[in-house]
Length: 385
Ligand code: ADP
Image 1 (cartoon, rainbow, N blue to C red):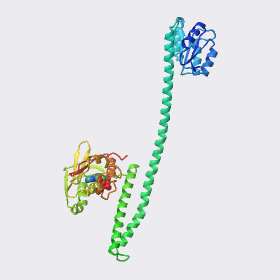
Image 2: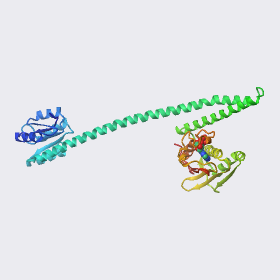
Image 3: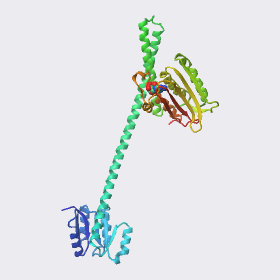
Image 4: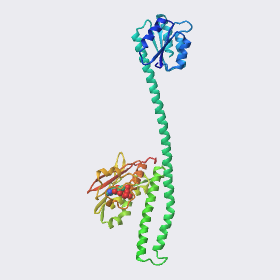
């Protein structure tokens, strides 16, 4: 016996008999009765999706019966058989949501069958939608929980990075001062071999110190704990300062320095030390990867973006496919031979500093010809976030 999905209440035996014959071969079950109490019991105990009722019956009106049916199974489609005299009361019931559809008497059997099919499909669709919605809500809740967990994990990982890097600074400073004492011959003259070991240790300590500083900087930027010290500064002055700082290095490497700075550039709001950090990173990279030729430092005004700084070299260049990876953390591109002594964090830090000024950083590079890194600093920077 298929599950009862359709219930028909009518006091006319001939209608009930017709319905029994009509729904006999369907995949769903149909129950018929003249007794409204029995009808309510069936609705309560079966998976009734469609309730059909006559209106004029002894004991209860169809509208009142369907109202009770609605209380038991609100989602079931309620259909009222109506005669001409019932039209007004039936329309009121429709307006109150007690009745879903009217079927005027006398009705065609095919019309009744089509209406029942359509109603069952409707209820199935409503159920499907509801269960879809419920599973979406469940998935959403799971995703929210997962994202909160990830956030927690990320924050504790950040905290760990921060604490470990910070804690490493003290012993590192101790090693450095011990190396200074050894180097100063205060504990006796060092042999050439000993000096060589001290020198290598110093290089390692300095490298570790740079790495710790870079990691700390990035952790601060990423957690929004980096405080920038904004002031109005001159783009021209910053370029001159940076060139002064690096002149001995350029000479040592036999690299020409060219400046391309537009005269009378306006002041900009920036953190001078952090901007110098960006330039230092870019210039050190330029020098690392340029055996001969020149390094050009530029500053021009762009009406939309503010000051556009650039550091261009005539070095080995960077392959097109490697360029998008450069600003990722710990990324060093190209052959191992060219991974000269960096941490792979420099450009990530540059990007964070520039981002905190409201600017952007990008590059143009042609392998074998050189690279040019550009970054913008708006004249008025937003607060870092
Ligand atoms: P690193 O500390 O290793 O220099 P960066 O983030 O500053 O880290 O640079 C990442 C990588 O980008 C470098 O290791 C190098 O492969 C490439 N790169 C950066 N600047 C240049 C440049 N001017 N010319 C060629 N390659 C460069």
